[in-house]
Image (cartoon, rainbow, N blue to C red; front, side):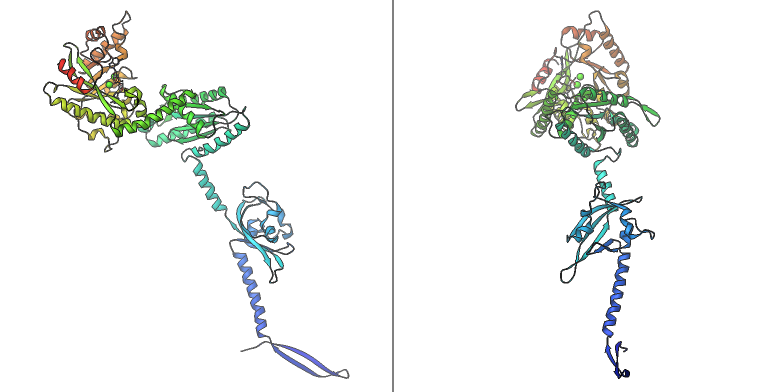
Length: 599
Ligand code: C2E
Ligand code: CA
Ligand code: CA
């Protein structure tokens, strides 16, 4: 095995003459290998530094750069041979992680490390002039010799730009509506929060919040399908954004619900003007497939108030005002007033109590006779729901039906009414004196729309013979599903009555389109009878009776209160009637006695 020797030659002189040379040999094989290994290690380290995917920078104790590997040159946009390393710092800028605040020298990771600090997870933005900026996370620390003396510092930087983009995308998605790209509810809340804080500092700089809901949007989805419905929502988003200023925010809260935050100084007059503009923008017809469709909008408006402390409050009030707009007939803007809040609170209470009522069986049925006029005979009853309220006593539908409709509680409640009326009818039918009676039950449009197989699917129920269903035309035209259910009920032989006839928009058309057996003429036509010279109402009743006869339908006149009215409708050809004149709605026992007395 070869060895490496270090030879030392020492000449020995005598009188100026070299007489001998002493050669000393020392084996240094180990040392030479150590040096070679050191070289190798250094080369390996350099290769590693050049190829590693993180940026590595190091400097000596004086702050002179000793390492600036390929990745860090790339990160800083310095990966070009022509750039003189002493000029490097002129080719990029460093920012805080927000991307805008310049990073001061003392916060640059390598300087911090050089000061002896252990740097961990420091995020910053490197912005090479003219190149894409990167976000990096830097870690490093001081370099010290074996005796603790400062040798310099080293820092490694990891590129997290992609991760940050992904995070930004996620953040964007979390704060925006997927379909329209508009801010969503949670972003609206945080924007509103800033606005409210500003209003607190500058009370003469008010804001306003609007809730918008498209009227009858469900029809569009039902008739044209969801894709077209989505296109309408996109177009709505665009129109709303166009109609407000850049500083205002249009948000989508879900479904066909939008909100607008008017941020720039905006008093009540201004806000109403903007609402008017939004209404106008929405009133233009939408092109859907081949059709032009008009969609109206209900808007609730809440103006800034000192009393508002949380973002939920103005939004809640705008929502409340929006509901009032719907109740007042849609297609309008309503400004929030405090009295609405109290009513809204009452509705919330009612909802809770209604749930208890369902659970605890607090509903009752009252029955109002339906009379055949000529002999004055009771042919049956209309079942009318009542609520035996634990505190407020016996309540009529006026006190709770609207809340039941709005919350969907009408569906289970209606199912109970149907079961109870059916049970009562079967009981009466077992009595020979009462077996001829019919019972009619009022249906809500929502009951016609329960999905097939659902818990309260009408088509899954069985009704005794003699049970009639009453439905108003306004709840019918709502959806194709309702039509389907109606037809299926009709095929099964369940008699249908068109209630409140004459109050809808297309009464005669509805009477022809729906498979109905009976028309119930609304009280409003009966009340003015007998006519006092102006015989418009008589003419309407007469023509309804004629129409019904042509279509072999029965007619019931509702709301007869006086003998004169009874005579008038009878003269006009109406065979059946209902009203306080004959009897008020009463419980089953009273009703049965009435039927026996008027058989
Ligand atoms: P409706 O179907 O038109 O029922 C007739 C309403 O007029 C009843 O009011 C009845 O008490 C009242 N009425 C009867 N005769 C006269 C009269 O001569 N003069 C006057 N001024 N009123 C008369 P009620 O019981 O308060 O019911 C109101 C509405 O609530 C009903 O109007 C119906 O639409 C709805 N409703 C009642 N029960 C139910 C139910 O079980 N389910 C559903 N979905 N709705 C119901
Ligand atoms: Ca009715
Ligand atoms: Ca009616």
